[in-house]
Image 1 (cartoon, rainbow, N blue to C red):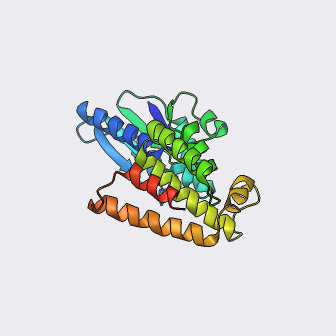
Image 2: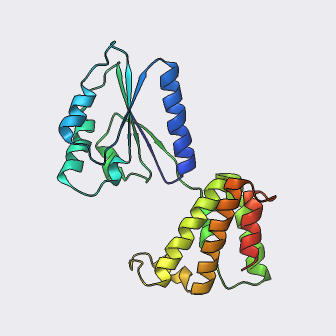
Length: 229
């Protein structure tokens, strides 16, 4: 059986991957991790058609195959997975950090697919971020942050804020593609100094959380940070 776990909610998708591996281990399956970066089609083909030494059922885990640069090798690897016949002694788990398109998924019609994406609350909060602060903007941003934390969790909110600040900095520097017009428009609501300060403070919060140096929860630190703009 082929299982595909994908989507940009990395915390939920990684949790699903961990749970799938644990379930396989509890079934006494042999876990084999395959690194696709330098993987050749012949090697993958051999991996998928080789039995374990003691004829033990196997679960092969492949991460970020679709994130490889476009190439003939990548296409051949994907084609090999798509052609693997269902076998009782072989399970394949494909984990992708991005959400696969309908075209990508169409190549795996028999796969069990689980997608994990940020909620609308998350995007509503991120899209409302602004360096042009007043009491109404702060109150709205704070309310949206609380909703995002409730729906997606504080860790993912932190990760997505880090990503959004990076995208806004790229837009501010003029390196964002024209297709990202929403990000380019939002970047105009910040000064470069504000975005750099946000980035520095997020790195500091990350360090404090890792070392338990703060008495505040992560969501409280995010709230205080955004209120300080």
